[in-house]
Image (cartoon, rainbow, N blue to C red; front, top):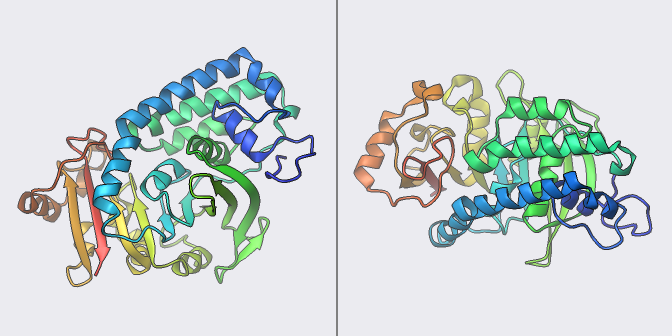
Length: 347
């Protein structure tokens, strides 16, 4: 199993070096993984990752930073927890929208599995893992969202399972290092317990951000948020985070349905702000007495898969408000000219 950034004399690679190895980035001098980075397959992986992230930076990430500085930063405090439900392991976008958050809380259906010592794995298994990372990230980097079913199938065939490999890649590519890893679970009262002791299992990573010289926490929990399945533990844990800056992107329109009313209410209660596309909380839920809405981009309706969730009231709002255009795609409508983005700020 990998170790944290401390215990420098251990023969095991640090979590940061594992993250950099998986991300196709150079590891630290003297790292046990250094020899693996000379493998031709890893070098090809590194080149592919450099190219993919460079394209994402040009097409998406740099434009989001510019938009955030001029449109988001003036209207919300930056030092709140970022709550990103339905986002899976998408730390990349959580961090680019909220780089100053002291903590990030992510949730998805994908599991958390410990990463083994990479030096104990056969080289073909490592090479297969690198290929799975490239395939899993292809949709996320090119279309801004994960194909959850495909990602789960890819890593079920890999020596490295669950969400940690993707989280590690996004952490490394975001310029952060990993100081500590804890495998945790949530008690029914929302308290954190060490180890996997309850159905709501997760991971807590302590991250160092060299740009601010501050530590921040990243939580990921495996949890079903449907009304009949949602755990009181995750409800209470999230309720205690507020007021949060919440993010919803490519959320499958689940909270448009009564079967996800509990988590919809949670977000409306705990959030001081919500950045979302139309697949998150329906616009009718943001009542004018409690919320101020700022609209960006254009609303052309959902993609064909979700055509039943067209919002007439949102279409009318866009027609009446002449929103500023977006310079990046967001959500399922990946073309910036057809993407919509809603910033809801609590009054």
